[in-house]
Length: 213
Image 1 (cartoon, one colour):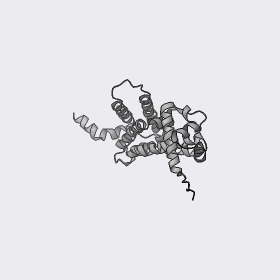
Image 2: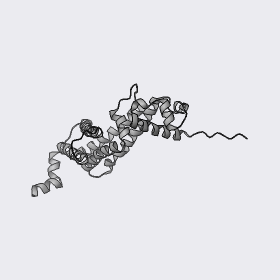
Image 3: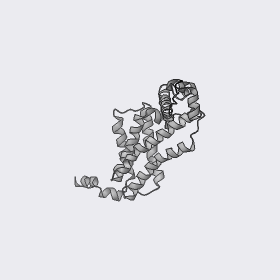
């Protein structure tokens, strides 16, 4: 009796190809993402990639969707902190942590342009969720009277621009300080202090202690 051929589960194929894509990106950059290269690295037939992803752009789209979903989970930690300012700070610090722990994915998401690739609508929606977390964190601090009132989206964009710039420099090894972690946290503090509602800040425990001295 002929053996029954077992079909590889779809999830296993996706995980294998995603892992292969990340390794190729880390070592050789976007140019290495070919169907033949992905298939060889993942240890599957090229037809398996076509059947599951459609083409290599489908693979890249999955990488982006997974990356932004993980980024959203990572930075959402701040929304669970009671103090809205500390929550905002925690989310911004978590953003750097995500970038350092997922360098290849972060670079694909924000730094490396893949020729002839356009993200799908689903990928763009998931990416927007990450930015939405930052907007909600800003809104929480505003509603608590800790940040001056303004357009939360505009302020979130300013915060993202600054933190992304710092992270991009760090990932490119263009840092001229010994401890980028400390410098980044001071950057976050500087930005938050600059956005503080002066009346709320004056009533904060830290400000009272400063006056006492």
